[in-house]
Image (cartoon, rainbow over all chains, first blue to last red; front, side):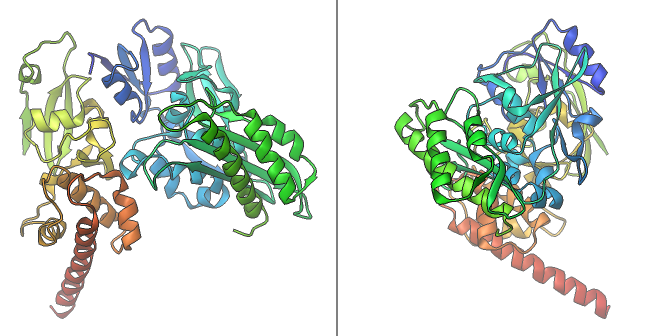
Length: 292
Length: 187
């Protein structure tokens, strides 16, 4: 690996001041499962790394029925999977977290890093989007909140400014009769990068037969994870039926912009978007109805 | 006992770097260990090339194969994806630390008994990973073993013998625990 400097930040203000005075091309180190490999292989450049694992707010993992779920940017996946409340109230998030690497990767990898790495195929990002997650970004001017779907701008690029960093992710508390799911396609059973990923969430009305609101998001079929806002507009106040679910799958196929690469062709990806959107929406509805 | 390693790791590679080396204090396999390293060096590199702990292997060096698995603060990690400087103040368990006073760990015995290896490069990582599994889940099902070990790759044997070895070790450890309980009850 290229020669680098290593620094630790111990507080938010410490990190902001390190970032704002940086002339080295500093990169933020959380779990390092992407960053260390990229530096070693020369795919990203940095003169210095600043480790955020000693910032208390970046290590917070807390669920509260009133305020929801807060996941600090330095919280590794294994901690998320240990929390029974998260498995119970955010199964659509756990669908994605379980898919990220093996046990050894989950011991280090963070959702904050998954988002900041901004891979179009990141598994957690569509799941965060359908769970209406927001980012808390710290910088010189204090904190700002940004919806996860507005965070990635291109492969490997985010809206973060030079003196800014992602401090935590926040998911609102689950509403009654709500459900979410995330599915991905890979050509084997485990340990692979998504050819296509699709997430869906719904909130049902009191009859549990009409959708009050819904969200659909896709991975690996555009330069960034894709929030399909047309699906939300279409599904609002719509009665659940197989035709409605198929129509949403078609809308997702229209919205996606897949490319052909080593993992799959554009045509295969567009086909998979239809299948996975339908299945994840069905699963989200079943969870909202309390059937699974 | 405090073991201090101030080996010049730069000289190992016959190069010199501008970056200042950083002292790191850790506990490795129960011993206090202090070493100097460059920030760019992985924990795996320092374990193998600086500290002579060559059990953990470099397979892919990018987090895919699990041959470098160690347990850091009780958590299974790929040591190729941890910077050695990140180990400051932390405890590390490597394959070298698994052997007890009475000899090989039951997992090591069962990997031998079941012939769960051929070339052996992946084996330390598999055993450390299996150890982490049994710490967390002493009675895993075959499916749980297979899922847990999905991040460890073997290119020789296939996985059946490995899975059998882990299940046999779990049963053996269970039996030993029962015998210990009986002995202490009678004693």
